[in-house]
Image (cartoon, rainbow, N blue to C red; front, side):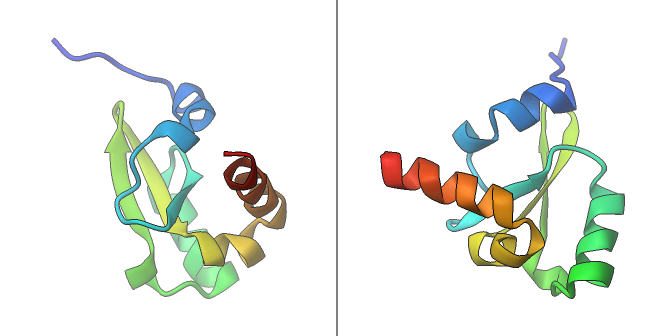
Length: 86
């Protein structure tokens, strides 16, 4: 038997999850195919810099922290604030 986590729960605990690589942060907690397409087409991220990882049966999307700065500046600031306060 396997447990299940909703994508909302995965998103809520994203800062506690182990990233696929050091320096990576979660961009999306589900919808990997769609989100990867958006990152490549609209933000010009190199597909080699995008990682898909399964958590709780959710296909999460991870990108380097520095890429988050221009993909989602508010999320970047939130992450940096957490790191400063740690």
